[in-house]
Image (cartoon, rainbow, N blue to C red; front, top):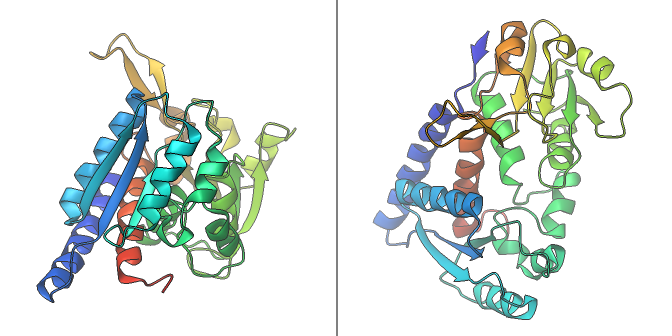
Length: 293
């Protein structure tokens, strides 16, 4: 059994990005610029945004942050997005989700210029991804592909079971893994809350991507010997033994599942760091106009 060290792989990719940014600046160009939009003061969103700012510093990428109170109107938020769309000094930007209930998230996503949509959520990027055209890929699915590739995991002809059908992870990773690419060329089964025989499906899988949002959902009796397990889950669960009173828990019962696996990602330290580094990679692509001219 080999633990896939997402933290180490992410650190390596950050070094590669930093080296390329340094070359761009040395040649007279400017560093890529990633902007973030943060609404309210949700602890998880604050922490995640801080991680993105830190990653920008490590990669030599300029970052800026626009903050809004939770009471901001949808019109005000979309007006700010349009300003970012028209700001030539900003190569890409993200709107941190979730947003307050009075704001239509899809309307906000639709307002983002798809050429600056480094989160890969705009319908144009989603559509292009689904048919294999160049686009900004959603950060978490893109990070999963990087993990598979850099861990030397052969995906061609393998049966992959994706647990979860979210627009952010489940659907795009399923689409990417079935495409004619490497990693890719998988036979993909997507399971969700209405799937009656999830255990049976998982036992057929060479690769399991667990993104169902239920702590320790995947048990040892759902995983066959030698499977690859990618755990996308990050749920805070109470833990009185920890100083902060909680710990991050994945969708996989790691302790009991890991001994059966050929490769497995831990939580934390697996997919999470790769999500952020994928965002850095998309920002670099945006600055170089490699996806859209």
